[in-house]
Image 1 (spheres, rainbow, N blue to C red):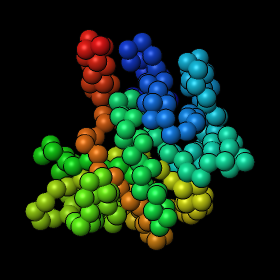
Image 2 (image 1 turned 60 degrees about the horizontal axis):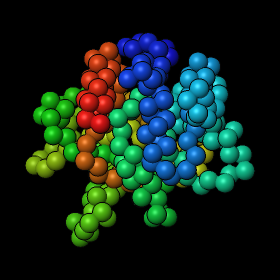
Image 3 (image 1 turned 180 degrees about the horizontal axis):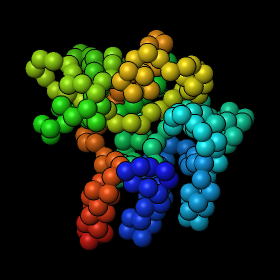
Image 4 (image 1 turned 120 degrees about the vertical axis):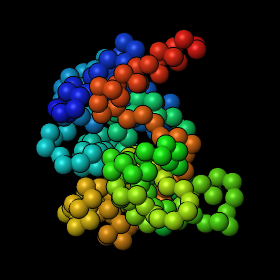
Length: 243
């Protein structure tokens, strides 16, 4: 709610409903388990509950979404029925439910601690934009089909990387954690590279945790500015006309 570029962002109206409600719906459509909105503001919780969703109040002083998710999952699932949790940011109202489901796929490998999403950069300006986080991912060329779309994340950076010929990948800030991996992650202090790049996932890599990334077709529009909000509203209007 205190976003400097778009104050009150979670409750911004999109097609007659708050943005956080649209994100909650996308998560429900993924149909991979219970959906809980973790928030520190009563007005967000009220908006979610008014539309039939579940919200969990958390402390307002968390430094990251991962910390907030850890508190929320412990409050909502103290019996630890679930061994994995997806951290979906509340500003992705157009994310594809299939992409949310895909984020769990790498966890089928017992060696993977955390999974995330990437998409190939197709707009040339994004290659050099420091606001676009690039994922450096190693793919196994011997695999085919859906397995070929999963690679091991070696690094994340705001720089244009890697160099040389070949695609660059835009990191999508959604994470699927093993429950124990999330506990370990939030228990560690911010790392040197995390502070330098301002990317919390580097804490996990520096600690030797394994992150695998799933290649999806496109990057969902994240709402950070009034211009982003206008773009998303236009897309929702177009969807309503199509239906």
